[in-house]
Image (tube, rainbow, N blue to C red; front, side, top):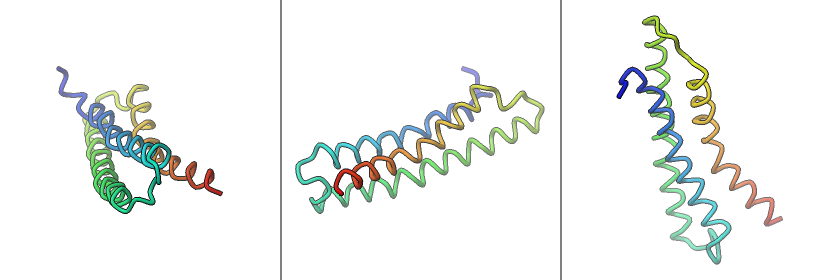
Length: 108
């Protein structure tokens, strides 16, 4: 395993908490009878968001610092794959927001 590519792995992994939060929010808003009207379900969503967002942002900062150090050391960063991972990881932050907006617009 090439350990010089650890920032790319961290960027890829940083999308996972947001994907899980997006899936949970979509399930809760669209497939659970009563949706977020259930008090405990809404609390779980808030708790999950309070964990997922800081975790994702911390992973992205860590990976960005790693990429900066690699580029400063003379490595060929960022490559096209790295730029794609950066884009996907930052766009993943919008997933739960898009689900919430879709739910809000459907309830109008």
